[in-house]
Image (tube, rainbow, N blue to C red; front, side, top):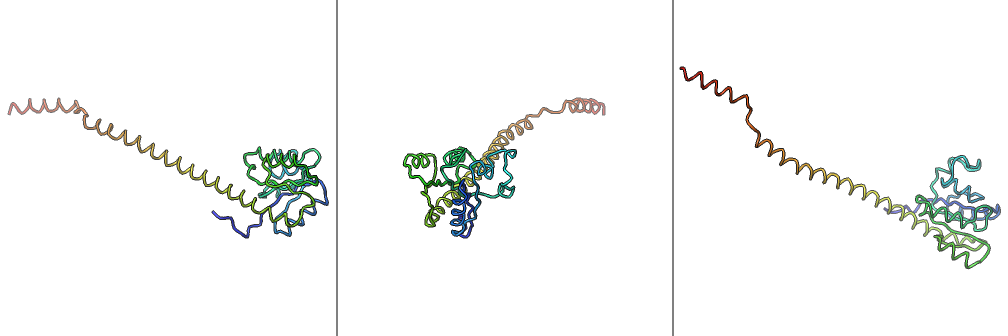
Length: 208
């Protein structure tokens, strides 16, 4: 299945800096992405459905919960939950692990970059993020979409295969039962009530 070229993909941007959130939102919208911005990793998890409703922040609406997220771009240095921690939680989730994650940071620390890429991040952008960086997002989104479609196709094929297997198994059982039923009918003993009747009839006709 092909992903429509005109699809407007949804990006979840996470940054505790208001100015950086405004910048990344403007760059993403300029690049024709639908954008949701939050100021912490915990709010990002709420939107992704990885936290209980009891911990939901009022700033996260129910509509945001229902919107599919195609890519997450997050700052690395944030209080309480870093971008790396958020990345790990996403990759540990069976339902969200295929969503591409991009990390941003104003600090060029090779060990940090390597750790994020090893954990599954698609890219590591150095701040300030540029408009040209947005062009590098779409291939990751498309790869994630194709992977999702492929998994759906595999599950669908598995379901069909399982159904056919059960049908063939039932047919084999029926084939085994049918000869036994035929054999039983063939060797059925004559009705015992018929023999006395025939004997009595022969006895009566002997007097004629």
